[in-house]
Image: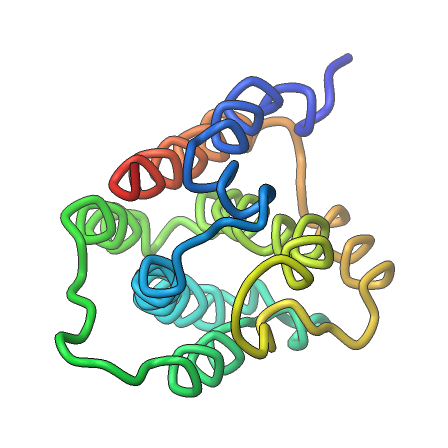
Length: 175
């Protein structure tokens, strides 16, 4: 029997292989591009976490939510006009999230992709990215990982792959 991680491994690998992500791991990320990317994340997380709250998906793991921390990072880093705008790929993702707003199982798949990435890869990324990186600071990473995993099952694989594809589409705009 496969796991959700195994069923999404190909899309996960594709997301990690995007040039923007590679530039981060090489320590060469452009600060202005990263600020723009943070702005896109802020827009996505506000919607995803709002729907997650409506369906109590963060119950018992409130520290998993990242909107406030992303906003702190963005606010501290933004110093220049012109200010970022919502990108087309981000708008498409948010439109999609709105379309599944009444489907908690699907929303949980997106929380899995977005928030588990913050829990796992975020610790490494925080050392490579400019800014304060509050979005990667959690009180109890192992505990949060276990709580998220308890809400997952393999039936979420297709939707998690959809979340990865939206992420890939956003990352490609930074090529």
